[in-house]
Image 1 (tube, rainbow, N blue to C red):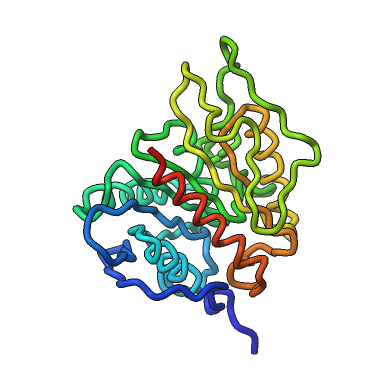
Image 2 (image 1 turned 90 degrees about the vertical axis):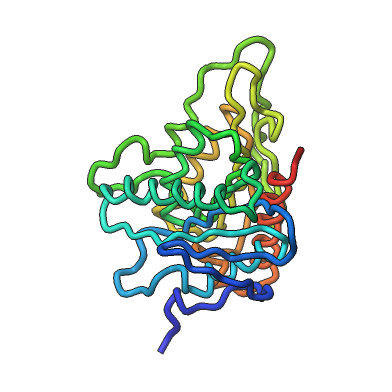
Length: 278
């Protein structure tokens, strides 16, 4: 009998963090005094109907511990999606988890990030379109970045690619076009477009997105990631790509390889660099 995905162990073995359950939000708490940067982990949705609470999956508990061991306080809200209309409530719950972190006296309220997984990628648009001042970085791992064919109508709010449709550049600011052969080695980072310095003075600062792509992505998901990446680079959106050439969707639980482990560490460390930047 095979192991269900939600029972599969995380590809890394970080030291478990202290976990506090506050209603529908778990906090993975680092050791040490002082105010910590913080990250909201937005687990994949919709989950399998027979799966337990995603906060208890080894995968997401592993990510919480992985952040905590580097001094980051991680929040994992419980999210449930049965249809497109549930995305409104889930988006509000993610925003509430961010505010819960910001109100915590152990958190540096001006240094937060959000990390989206799988179907939760549809929630990215809000944060790309109107980023709050305290949002220092975003991450998305094997994300769904557009509704799938055959779905019921989905509010354009939940089409992250639409959030990239910024006004045309003004003045001398231009985006550096991506090279056709712009790829990364396993677990490494590539900067597309103009990178972290891409924000133009006339526009609000856009948070950098750390995008992890699985080379063996599901065929219905891969085109949404490719289309998003092309537009993001064309528009000069700050983007870092971590490629996992031999990884499948869910590689961080399914593919226990050095390539997978390196990719997870790289994504974490890149996001943490954004949280700690001046």
